[in-house]
Image (cartoon, rainbow, N blue to C red; front, top):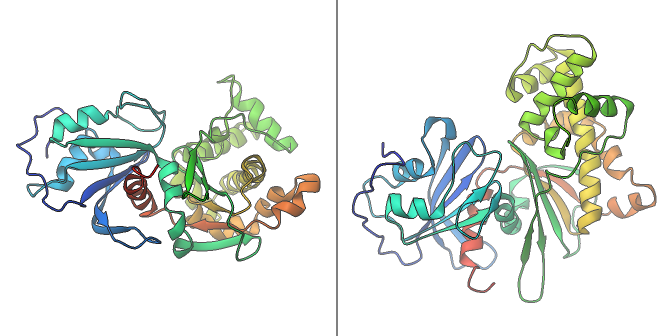
Length: 339
């Protein structure tokens, strides 16, 4: 496999003018696709080839892209959706990706003409037209909503959030760092958890609770508050133990997670005026959909005083993230000239 530090072979650029690469880089996995424009305005992206990689198995994104391309023709352009904030110099500020990301370095490693960087949930928001086709569960609100701003939120390795805004000239997407504001606790138990987390950090952000690592933080805090020794050490282990009723503290952590998520999503929907709907696209959510449905999520989401009536008119749905990241990144790329 080609390592990120090795020189790339002489590039054989694809002769398909509209063919390009799209990658969705999360904290745990990278999804890569070879794509082209479909000519359909509602579904503008056609996936020609798609593959999913584990970050831990590779030295960097260049190595993953080199493996995906193989020895065949390579497209001239690549768009990379990534957790974090893309700087003007083509690098990324991120706390969740395990290796440095640089568009210019990837160009040099692989002989590509241009690599573009876009925030991962900004990219997912550009796939808004395909969201309903990926539907898993509607939590509350009407089946349909007016054409208005749409909020896309996903707890994964961090918490991503973006807002899709319709305009007369086409959709605009507002990228946010929705996981970084301070976590707002509403119950005595949540306040005790935040106080415990503050022992190690002065700022307890939303994603310190609402993410995969955040679920571990909740579980660890609950164990400490009840004088237990933590037995579980990964988000998957906590989720599995909770779903199989093997660990009462794991189930309590999942219940706290769902309540905090409902309260936070209600705050975000009001802050961003997301009257067109809320899509929850994090990888963990489809796994816990039954717990989420039975939890305090909806009650906490609606618990905003006189604004609960407005929130009740907003559809809130869980969708499969799956290929939405690469589809959204490709949609962003295809619309960049118009923007």
